[in-house]
Structures are given as C-alpha cells and as structure tokens.
Image 1: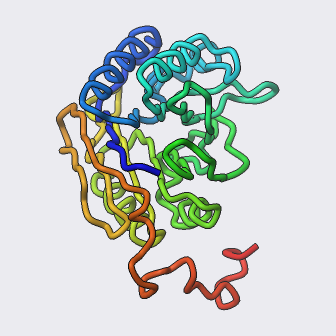
Image 2 (image 1 turned 90 degrees about the vertical axis):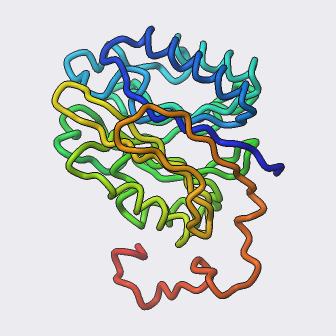
Length: 268
C-alpha cells in the first residue's frame, strides 16, 4: 500500500443539527483533500452530536439508505478521500448503535463498528456492538475503536490479531479524563505494531467539556500529530503501512505472546 496522509478533525458537534454537521463535514473533507489527505477522521457521534437522547431514534442513520450517509459516500468518491465518521446507526428491533462508519475512497462502505464497551449509562441509549472485527480497505487492513472501547487493551489486541495495521478511534472524551486516551492510543500503537489515529471532540456540549488531545502515532510510539485541549484543529499525519513490519523480531509482541499462561478469560 502506498503511503498516505491522514487528517484528524478535532472539533465539536452541533447537537441535533444533522444537516449543519453534514455541511461542516463536507467542507472539512474538501479542506483535507486540498491539503493532500487520503483519509479523514471525525469524532464519535459527530453527525448528530452526542447528547441527543430524546431524539436519538429519529436522528439515527440507516446504514443502507441513510440520506446523510449517501451524501458522504458521494463526496468521498468525488474527492477520492476515505472517511471515518461517528454517528448513530439504526438497529431494527433494538436501540440504535453508537457506531463509526468507514467509507472508502471509492464511496463504498468498507466497514462499521458499533461501540462495545459502555461508559456512564450509555446502555440506556444504545445497544452494544456484538463483535470486534478488522476489515480491508484501500489503505490496508483497519480496525475501529469507539471511545471507551480503546481503554481496554483486549479490544485493540483483538483487532490486531485479526490483521489490523491501522487502528482508528473516534471519541467524545471529556474532563476530568484528560490524558487517558492520548496515552492509551500511543501504547496501543506500540504494543500492536500498528498506526493509531485518535480523533476527539473539543469544546462544550451541554454539561460536557470535551478535552481534545487528539493524536496520531507511529507503530513505534512516535507522536506524529497532537492536538491541544481547547482548540479546534485539522491534524495531519503521514502513514506508511510498510512501517508496521518491524526491522527485527525483538518487539514483535503478537508473536511473543504465551496465551497458555494468561487468565482463561483472556483466551476464551
């Protein structure tokens, strides 16, 4: 896979205003593409805002026929730009999913991931995802983490064992939990020999103050891009998937594991 530039959009969302958020996403896509980016990431639930419980069912997108998704897919194809977008997805027969959708450069939906680990009462709003699976894209094999999912080493490791060499996490991390995600995603890169891209909100939404600190990390843990705690920003980072193959075997953690020694709950 040829190298590419990733763009992480550290921003806030306009609660309930899907049309305005969609317009902002399309503008951001144009900006990123003009800067030579091949892939762009938006935060968790960016399309609708996060605190929308009273209208969640109404605003959730249908994966196959959602109007906003169709517009995003058309724009992705027109720009030749991959998109990683947080949004609620309809779940027939259940509560919506808190999901991230990956639209590839040709406008096809390459993969989706529903949040599997809930924080702070999210189970009252959403149904959990039932699997963690990597998927193939034009950028290479990718896995997605949705906010709190990334705080568990098992989730990223599961995706890495499924072949992911690029881990994208979309989040709505808020005060007083600064530093957690930035440190975790740097560690996930190192322990799984994968690039990690972390996109968080910044600013205020109702009672939450989002803490930014989005970042991009090389498989060796080198910081490729870093956002501050207060400022909206476009963060750009170079990604070369060939760099996920180590020069030697000394730190090849995936190959050096001893599952027979671990607690059974880690291996079942």
